[in-house]
Amino acid sequence: MPADSAPTGADERLKTEPFLARLMKRPELGAIAGVVLVTVFFLIVADPAMFTLAGVLNFLSPAAQLGILAIGAAMLMVGGEFDLSVGSMVAFAGLVFGACVVTFGMPLILAIPLTLAFAALCGAFNGQIVLKTGLPSFIVTLAFLFIYRGLSLVGLKWATDGSTQLRGVRDAVEGDVLAPLFSGDAFPGLFVMLAEAGLIDTFKNGMPKVQGIPVEILWFIAVALVATYILLKTAAGNWIFASGGDATAASNSGVPVRRVKLTLFMFTAACAALVAIITVLDSGSTDARRGFQKEFEAIIAAVIGGCLLTGGYGSAIGAFFGAIIFGMVLIGLTYTNIDQDWYLVFLGGMLLIAVLFNNMIRKRVTGER
Amino acid sequence: MNTRTTHEPILHMENIEKHFGNVIALAGVSFDVAPGECHCLLGDNGAGKSTFIKTMSGVHKPTAGSIHFQGRPMSFDSPRDAMEAGIATVYQDLAMIPLMSVARNFFMGREPTVGWGPLKRFDTETANRVTMEEMRRLGINLRGPDQAVGTLSGGERQTVAIARAVYFGAKVLILDEPTSALGVRQTANVLATIDKVRKQGVAVVFITHNVRHAMAVGDRFTVLNRGKTLGTAQRGQITPDELQDLMAGGQEMAELEGSLGGTV
Image (cartoon, rainbow over the protein chains, first blue to last red):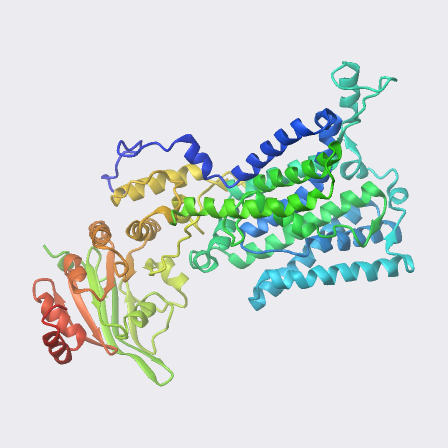
């Protein structure tokens, strides 16, 4: 290094950027603003029961199931690709998991890694086709939306002799040591203690009304934290942004773009498999309609979370809050007198607003006019 | 004054020929560049400039001719090979991502890391500090390392690309028409950057078709026309008009210029 390098430190010619202006450039801003708006709305309109501990967990559960998918979708979108097959993947992975546990009688320690690996393989297959042919991932994974859904139907009938529902999962995993990690409520002891201390609502017999935190919420938080860490704090995160921003430029700079995208496809499919495992254990059965249309909700949550449809920009934390908005509205409407079918109107409206908003943010960030 | 006399050429290309099928893109081009020197390669569109620099940077293998790098015969199999040896090319599209911050772009594909195993993470602190330092050294004051590249001007983007190449050890820096899409002021900034980089001892190959830009920073000038060298001139041995004539193929240009009232 030559000695003439200027000392580090603030440059007096530069104004410090106002806090608000800096905030405006965060991709997750829209989603957080959305959560605040929706919370305020329901605080005014809904039965106060919605914001008790039981009520909050009640809307966080579906938010978590969608959220795990949405974070996978968001990572892939930042990397510049789509996966429309995640909803069908939930059903397909559910079938594989159900078959492993019920039909083949495997313990969870085998069935869970097998299901995740199988899903990752399907994701890799999706990814290979996209990368090898150069076709848009939108169309390739749209094909797999139908293929996986169809295979789930056919496979279920084969596994159950003609039914599209596979039951008996709960009996099959009874007493398995891994079951509490993927089903039921976590920290029951803590909640009993809190109830005894009078900190949470209890039934008349002294047992807590809420027996613990549903495990999917913990998985949801864990996946969001890991994804955010990877995106913002690792070299791989930089590669993901670069691959999605401009694959050629990234490739010319030495980023292994193909490997990055392939891994993202696998991660997204594995997220779908995780949701499948949790929901199948939860309900004790698997059926072919599981995850129906979840790919769209996941992508919408990712877009609300600040992901650009063109890739290269977005956030996992944004998708986290995007999914919470969904859960709040879906469940929140039952605490009001509003017709629940407004949910669909809301879904479309939110998507439209989010895309317009993201477009504006992108122009701010890139200084386009 | 001329630094060239104190250094041996770092890159020497002798009688380079390149054929694509029956098209002869290069018909025996010789060229060399020394550390601390800015050697301008001029030529009109289609003269073979692009093919020649792609041969230099390892994209194309020459059909005939020899390349000596640091005194040894070299044959690069890929741009990566050439890059690792120290020949960096800044193409017109710059290989930069507008939505990403300057620091993230600067270290794209070559991220510094701290920690180990699963906790190995992108060393943002180092990345930010180095980016700010390197940019300041080339006279650009960023608002911050997290400023998106998209908000920079064209000239500033060029500078980021040049600073990145130099920081990662470029001994020979090939600039492919860095000023062609820029305004007057930004062009001046980029030319100043080239001057600074040259003074750090980097050998600069500056491709342009603008004689004025070449004259502003060049130590030597080589003109390509129809895949051949029309000769190399030292600074001070040639006037801009002569250079212009050489580039455009002399005779025809003189006639054209007459009809345009000497404005070209």
